[in-house]
Structure formats: structure tokens, C-alpha cells
Amino acid sequence: NGQTPADFSCIYSKGGEEMTRGFLQELVHILLTYISKSSQRSSKVLDFHHPHQLREGLDGFSLELPDQPENLEQILVDCRDTLKYGVRHPRFFNQLSSGLDVIGVAGEWLTSAANTNMFTFEVSPVFILMEEFLLKKMQSIVGWSADVGDGIFCPGGTISNLYSILVARYHFYPEVKTRGMGALPRLALFTSEHSHYSVKKSAAVLGMGSENVFVVKCDERGKMIPADLESSIVAAKEKGLVPFYVNATAGTTVYGAFDPLNAIADICHRHTLWMHVDAAWGGGLLMSDRHRMKLQGIERAWSVTWNPHKMMGVPLQCSAILIKKRGLLQGCNEIGATYLFQTDKHYDVNYDTGDKSIQCGRHQDVFKLWLMWKAKGSQGFGSQVNKCLENAEYLYDHLQRRTDFELVFKHKPEHSNVCFWYLPPSLRGLQPGSDRDTRLHQVAPRIKGRMMEKGSLLIGYQPLGAKVNFFRCVFSNPATQQEDIDFLLEEIAQLGED
Ligand code: ABU
Image 1 (cartoon, rainbow, N blue to C red):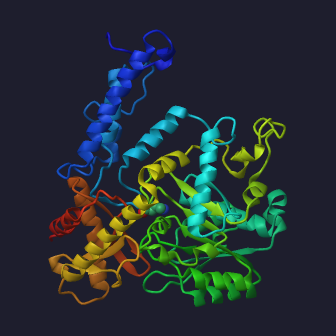
Image 2: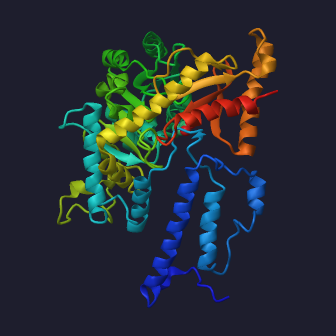
């Protein structure tokens, strides 16, 4: 049909360079249009279609894979359509990761162009050094001295938390690496009822069993109760289990609560337990002079999870596990494949860091964080965090004043999570009780369905413990303004009319 086939193998041949430039310029145009549209408040947050509708194909967009190459024009249409049916910002309050950072996008783009692997210095010299540099920087912000600390960037907070358990177990029982769980006593882990599900998942994956994760009670604000932690440890010992690991959370997923880290560290010290802090969500607050005191005691942790792809707005994915004791990651995970990790290379093979990882192939997630840090400076990240927390406070203040909304807990938010119910007119006069709860439970999913169909905004909901479905609004996108929060309140009230 006279159009250029999309096979780029000819990029190295005559005319290939021009074709590459033309294609990428068109792609930049698509991205710029997308970015500009995303920031317009008049445009939809999403153009929702049910899975079967997208599967069947819409307006020429098809998921089918061809036998013959498509032409370049069609590839560009595919790119545009893929973005068209995705979610946009800044009225996206659904997830802890959101926003669109242009420098971060540039970083992501660059790493795809570099297309290399993080396992050895010889194939990723600059990225490997950047990783060392950034991990040191993050460790110093956590409060560890310069002569300790290790870590690695890995795919998400769940995997970071998994690393913490893996390394803690190896620290106490190095024989597990070769002899397996059969050589170990029955181990017990502790985490709060508001903590992330990845602790139980990791215990299952690592062969320790999710039933051996003891769930510690929280106060009404979602913070772990230290006395309950201590009594759970004692009870587990009495049952013959061997406690070895405590996960404290700095910024719980739903409430945004910060566990009392110093009190937990004291207990861990008394019982010689590994203390991990899951700061996947709350770690970003360390960048803010105004808010970092909420993580007091984090420096006493033996390991820390910190996801820059959440509060710091780095494009997904970018998550770090920091381990206080150097050498443990390597000892725990090293297999020493001789085709990659030859010990007789002519450079310092300590920079072949890939064997610290449980992966082989590993993406250069570090680069976009490094580039954004260069562009913003530490202070820029701090201001970004402050702005998100100011937005949360603004929403909280408005919710307090309204009679058609009810806060899930009365305290001012510590993080950017704000949890609330919307009360439709028909529920406002009802007495607390099971009838009201049953009806209230249905409100958030109904409103959410309506907002998705309309595409006006996106916000998450969940039940928690005895609390029926409520909305959780989170702010991690610095592009969100107070007018978006005013809109959110009015839109929920309008969508929630009986
Ligand atoms: N586990 C982290 C993601 C949770 C959320 O975005 O709601």
C-alpha cells in the first residue's frame, strides 16, 4: 500500500536513520498531545470500556497480532490508542503511584534506548555506579552511617519486602541457603493488621507459611500497638515457634499510618529480632524537613523498603531495598554463574553486583530517579511531598465541615491518605447499626462505577476490619490542585445522589 513497513531492521541501512527520526518525531508528537490533554481538567480521567469491549476491538484498535508486519503509520495509531484507553491525571486519586514527571519519562525512554542489563559492570558501567551512589544517598537519608549499608533496586515494594525476609532468615540461619527450610525451626514473623499483604505473601513464597505470620493489633489510627507486638512474640515462643522478624510500616496502604518505630525497635532489641521498616509509601516523607520526624526510629531498622515510584513521583517502577549489614545480600543470593560473574576479570568485580539479586535480568530503574534528583534536587522532592500533604489536609478540613461526608477516623492525616464515607440523603438520618452498615457498604462501589462510566475522576475504596466500604483518597501527584479537590467532593456528592 506504499506505506513503510514497521520492520526497523533496516535502521542500519540506507535511509534507515531518516525513517527512525521521522518515526520518533511522530511518537514525540503523540506523547506531547497526550501530556497536554492529560493536564487539561476538561478531559476525562479515563475512557472506560469493559474488558470484552476492548478485547473485541474499538474504533480500529485491535489487540490481534498480525502474521505480516504492520506499517509505521498503523504502529503510531496503536501507540495513540493504547494511551487513549488508559488512565490519566491529575484527578486520578486511585493509587499510591500517579502523576507524570517529564524528566522521569525521559529517563525511562533513555534506559529503553540503552537496553542493557544491571548484572555486571561491563555491560552497565554507569548505571551500576549510579545505583551504588543512590543507595548510599538513600541510606544516609535513612540515618545510617556511611560505613554501613547495602541494597538493590528491585521490582516493587512486595519484592523489596520479600528481600528483607529472605536476608533476615539468612542472617540468623545461613544454612537455609543450601539445606532449605527442613534444617530450620518453625519461624515466626510479626506485622500489623494494617500492614501490606506482601509480608504474608513472602512468608508463603519463602516456604515459611503465611500462618506463621502473626498479625499484631493496631490502634484506631492504624498504628501497631507495641504491647500487642511484645505479647504476640512471647505467645509464639511459648507455642514453640522461633520469632525472628518484625515488619513495621511507615505509611500504611489504606490509612497512611506510621507505626511507632522506636518502641518497636526497643522490642526487637530485647528479643534479638530483625526489624524491617516497610516505608514503601512513607519513605518519600524523609525528603521533607516538615514531615521526616514521622519516621523517627527508622535509622534503627536492619532493613528498609522505600519506593520512589510512590510519593516521589518517579515513573513505575522504582523500588529499593536497603540492608544495614553489608555482604548479607551477596552471601544470601550469590550463585556465581561463571558465564557472567568471572572472578578473573581485569576490573574490580565487586562492581558486578548482579548476584546480590534474585533476578538475573534487571532493569536500570535507578536512572530515572537519578535524573529526577538532578532536576529537582533534594529540596524539590521535599516541596513535592509537602504539596501532596497540604492537599490531604485541605481535603480533610473540608470533609470535617460537611454533613454529607463522614471521616473514617477523626485525626488529621499523617500521610496523604484521607479516608471517608459519602452519606447519600437517604442514609443521613439512620442510626448506626447493621442496616445502615449494609446500605453504606454499597455506596462507594456504586459511586465508583458511575464515576468510571463518566470518566470524571478515579478514587479507590475498600472495607477494612469491621469498617464497611469507604473511599481512600491519596495524593502523590504534585499536579493536583485545590480546585481538583473541590471538584472531587462535588462530583462524589452528585454521583452519590439517591
Ligand atoms: N502496594 C502498593 C500499591 C497500593 C495502591 O496503590 O493502592
